[in-house]
Length: 213
Image (cartoon, rainbow, N blue to C red; front, side):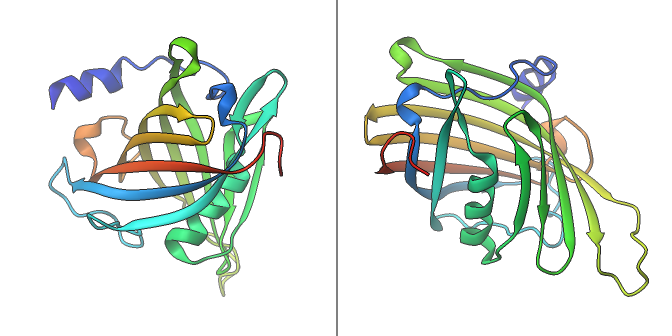
């Protein structure tokens, strides 16, 4: 609706350099992600090739959060690999550095390459580091197939996504959350153009101590 559109428009430029998580997130977790809702704000079908979740569908994967200086951040390289393996069954290569957290590149086995760049971000940690809310706009360039017969890459397909997440620390070994993911078929930052809006319920259980790799 209009309130969501205004929220997206008012998101600051880059905001903080990365999403900083409560200290208790540090370590390795088993994540259970259940699809709680799916809709199309624009009324148009999602792009071909998207792995579109269905309501009630549950996937599990590992996630890791690590220290970067005195802050705790998501290991986006590790986590992206795990999510794609769980949802698409593909082992991918990921290039990402904590010193440049806004850029991430995914290489698929068939030669497809997706470059993802965070263009807007806002995040807030609640009192006593018991909650976290963050919002990120991401621009994705699908570079097609690097191993094409012609050896020539076509023009990249540009799309965008908007992630809104809320997490609550239940205790040192349990975190619960809700994530909304909007997928836009163009670089538009207007959520009304999204071909899908998916609501996920997240349950995280610690499987590794702080600092584990």
